[in-house]
Length: 588
Image (cartoon, rainbow, N blue to C red):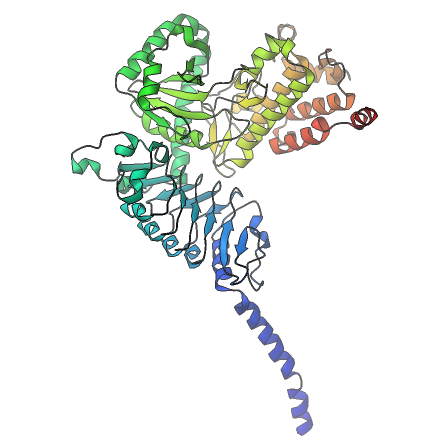
């Protein structure tokens, strides 16, 4: 009996040891670590940045984006900005009561700002901009007495600005711009110190900070939050898609009539004067322009037919020069119906929040009773179409390659890195603009179709320009990322050959530029599409460039690469110097 008891008892310490180890694993993670695990659990999707956050670690201090105090091992900073994080912000963030900096900007967070953030009383910087957060600004943010920077711009927040924000005596930087906030801006405490740059892009705000009088009727000044709280990222997509439908109708009309713009330009310019004189308001998306609404409207009133520089997909484009020398491009879009405002402002709020080196910057717009006047950065280099076909002498091969690379990066950003994702639908040479250094900027997002996740939609109107359109798009009206890739491939062929997609020599043979390429491929003469003026260009570079373009214009959408793949291939096989280049530089 004693022997049996001994055999039974001997393994017991091992089990106890294993049990203790398991308990230590479960209980070993600090409270801060558990709060971050809960934060991670609420994330639906990301680019994988949180993959290293392991619950079995004793503390989160080695996790990517997490910084701890070296003595207390408490989390003092969380920076996971620009990582495609999608989901609500977990209220457990409020358990990080030693947190000094919270940086969640440039992601896809939606839902409300957790009121529990008011528990993070050590916070000095709170960065939530460029997400899809909705609902009210929590009054509890007034508890963050050490807060110096508060940026919640470019979201879908509504309601009023709580007076408690004025209690943040250490606040030196406030940005609530580009939301749907409404009502009077409080003048309590520090809120009286901030100017219009902190509040732009909220058309229903009023107050002395933005030089906009509030209505005397208190009943008319109540926050719009009760009506707008249901706005969220799904609603954003619906309204944006509805706007696209309206814009496509305008585009189709202008496609047939834009050649008349010079004849109609005088009347259009007179229309601008009438627009702004009939009660117009200015909404700016970026607070770095030193102009008041009166300054801009005064300049708009002076525009006439001499300032017309072109016709876009929606109407006439003007050159707008300010007194300080800054120049902008102004696009006039005529309203279609009574519901145009409601949809279009949503669209513009999205477009105004998109910022990228290779995209044309939408600065703001003027809202008048009869039209929308969109204010863009002016690019002195004109369009790629002009540079290729009207003044080709300024474009050598290096410049062409650089332009292709820039346009590819801009389009890749729209497809893969911004949210909602954007399908451009009208990629062509005239929509690639050039700055003074011949750097490319993708322009004209009015025809863009906004998508979320993997959804795509069918419309009854085919937007775009003949010669650039993918065959499946013309047949079905279904726009996808791969239809943009096709158009980009046509653009590459246009640059390589220096011929328009519908050049007369192709039309005579019943072909376009893609048909010509396919004909040359069947006879193994595809290199004949390359313009002869390419002295000094490596054969490997030309072959790689032609290969990418050929893949992009494949008849089957599944065989076309993504724009991310296009960018990587161009970087590795086209833009990277060949070995001979290194030898030449070494011999020098």
